[in-house]
Structure formats: C-alpha cells, structure tokens
Length: 86
Image 1 (cartoon, rainbow, N blue to C red):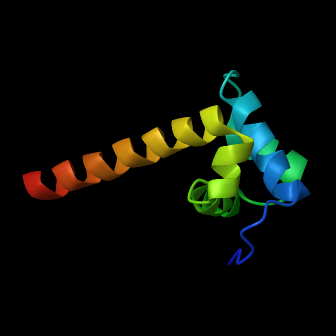
Image 2: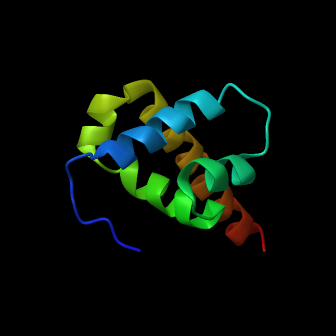
C-alpha cells in the first residue's frame, strides 16, 4: 500500500492522534487499530512508517513523530547489532 500524497489528510491526522493517545495506555494495539481504522496492525504500522518521514506530520504532531522516529531508529540499530553478532 502506497501513500503518495505529502499533505496530511484527516486519516493521517487521526492516525497521529491515535499514536499519541495510545502511547499513554497499556492496552493491546492491534484490536484498537482494527476497531478504530478497520485495518490490520501491519497495515497501520506501514502507514505510521510512512508518516514519520513526512515533514507535514512532524509539523502537525512533533512530539509524537519524534517519539516514533526514535523508536524506529532504536529498532534499526538493534537489527544492525543483531546482524553483526550472528
């Protein structure tokens, strides 16, 4: 699934708002994503990965986007470490 538009639409803003709110909860994310957006967690994560690369998303929700970018960067660093160790 590709999201070619750079401008944020209502769905993009809703996803960023969801990510901000979900960060403060301890509930499982998959069912909440399915209920609120009607998509799988994998599809949601793909959209979030695209959103964190968009300057408009950073402008709309800077704290949330920076947190998501840090999480992404930690995962990538851990993958590199794991690959070098094996």
